[in-house]
Amino acid sequence: MDQHIQNAVDTIQERFNAGSRSFRDQITLLVEPDQIINACQVLRDEFSFKVLTDETAVDYWGRKEPRFEVVYQLHCREHNLRLFLRTTAAEENPTLPSMTAVFPNANWYEREIWDLFGIHFEGHPDLRRLLLPRDWEGHPLRKDQPIKVEDTRFSFNYKDVDPGKPRAKR
Image 1 (cartoon, rainbow, N blue to C red):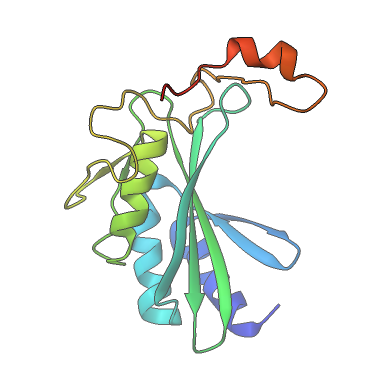
Image 2: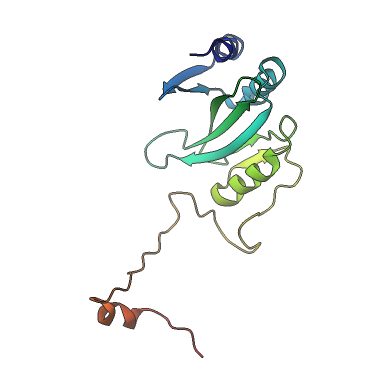
């Protein structure tokens, strides 16, 4: 492991009592939700992880509590290193602090997460739907959303599939 990333991991573990895991030489720090902002500030200011390259969410519905995890991917251009941070959000009223004060580009990522998963970000400057229409109900990437299954039409089954498919009227 690179010495720079090792120093960053050790510092975050000591200051924030963070857990860590490694998979295929990628380090992930597990940080408590109330400490995620401070941990990212330390990584940005002291270890040059100045770019938030991605922020996304994972839904562990029915398999794990707390249900949601938000994943932050940071990049240090100076050393060309990547570091992942994960934090959790509960199933009932999932809320996390907004990362926009630390990384302004988190604005769009958090809007997308709220739109698709329903995780609210406190302190976000403009938390509104990004991808779905304003009147959309629910959050489609939650695993408890109803799934609509539609048969695919092939040459061998078109007689069975076609009667159940609505057609555009000309």
